[in-house]
Length: 117
Image 1: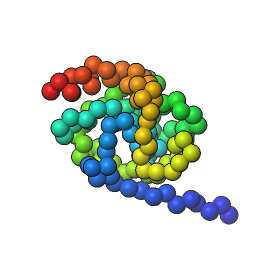
Image 2: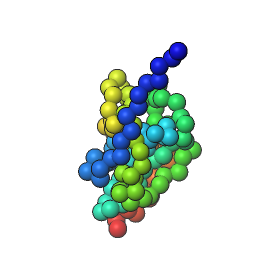
Image 3: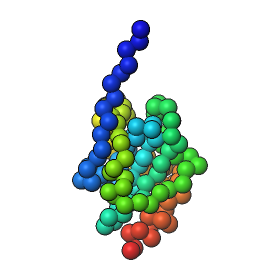
């Protein structure tokens, strides 16, 4: 009989959320935080039920960016995941990965508008 791997489910605190980091929900949805100002953030969501990342390519093709309050983002359940050979609750994206996530969900103007508020 196959043993089920224990997955640690974590609700993040608002202080754990940072721009340029990738998170993974318990619904197997990746989320990259693209911009933050005040109590709001813009993030790129992947489809739910997505397979584990196998490369450094961002999984946000054909996704639309989302704007929400930081506290709402934090309340979602997150889990540890592996990225670039390490296991953690969040992973820092390099500049090109962050730029790719912004481009894939067409968030450039929304980020500019948020930062100008």
